[in-house]
Length: 221
Image (cartoon, rainbow, N blue to C red; front, top):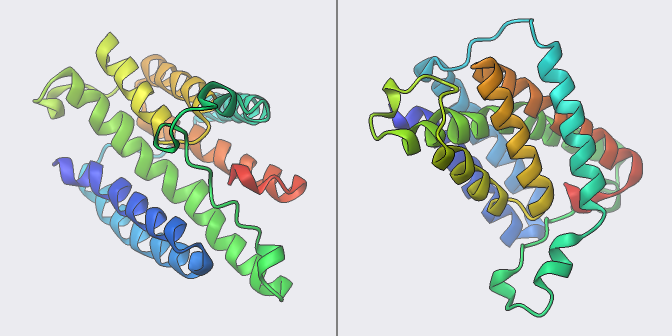
């Protein structure tokens, strides 16, 4: 059932689009997005049965660590800005909201409350929603319209690079996203286990959150 693989990603993407458009209401809209995504993820998890949790995840954690180290390192080069300088605005990547809760909330308690919601969204829900869509559905659908008969981890050149291109364009950090997607695609080819991609993705997003909160580089968030 394609809906179980696609809907969490669509719900999160739609919510984030609204939160970015009305950034003055970002905490409220993001919190509502997390709630809606959580409900859909619970349904999708039970329906898709594509993600089977287990504790043999050391390799996935290491991939997530390497991936986010690369992401942070290359993002600071701002290569996208150099590449698209002089291009029309619609051809340039849109920056993130870069919401700093400590600057926006008068109470540190409220700021940490929102950070908890932010981490739930980024480190738990986003990895599930994205992996179900990108590597659970789209990668197999590109291989065959009868995608449910395609085993997890089976790819063609078209599916590997097609997902990489689309994943890249879905993020403002193009060079970081391209390399990261190649890394996770490779992990899936190697292990044939979507859960390991979820763990790697979650590890990366959690460490990115820690990095952002420690350094103040909210433009990456």
